[in-house]
Length: 197
Image 1: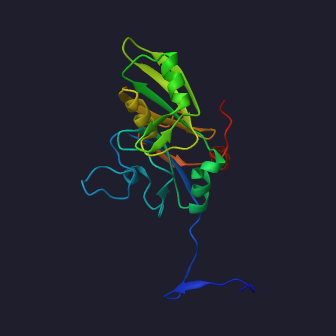
Image 2: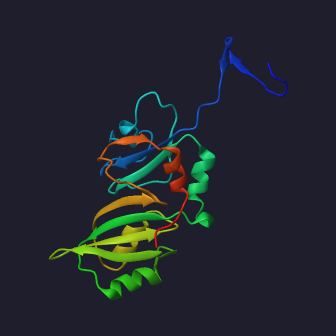
Image 3: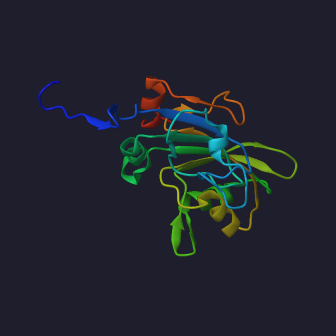
C-alpha cells in the first residue's frame, strides 16, 4: 500500500469510490423527476440503464415538460452547472396557444413579476407559427420553478408544449424520446459552455 493512501474495507472487501458518470435523457412528457412517486407515476429512473448506481437529476423538468435532462453522481459538477453565477444557458422550445408579436417578445425580455419572483428571459425569438399558435425559442440563464410557464401564464397565454433542447452547448439532437445515454468527455465540457447568441 502506498503511503498517504487509505483503504476502506467492509467484510474484508475493499470499497472504492464510484466512478463519476454523466448521463443525458430525453425526458418524455408526464414523467416525474424524482426517485420514486407516491402516485405510482413513471419517473426518470425508469429510463436509465440498470446497474448505473446512484444518479441525481441536474435541475428539474416539471411533469408536463419534456426534453434534455442531465443526471450524474458528481454533485460538485451538478452544482457548477446549476450555479446562476456561471450563466450556463438552458434553451427551450415552447409552443403557446397564441400568435407571437413583438409586444409579447419584448414583455418576456423585460420580465414579469409573479408570486414575488421577477421572471425574465435572456433571449427569445419566434421559431415558427401555425394558424392559432406559435413556437418560441427561449434561453434562460437562471430558471425558477415553472419559469417559462409562469411568465406566459401571467401574460394570459397557455403553454401547450415545453421542450428543453440544450444545456450550454450540449444539444438534445436526435436522442429519441425516452432514450438515455452517457455523455462523452467533450459533451460534458459542452454542458458548462455558453456559446449560443
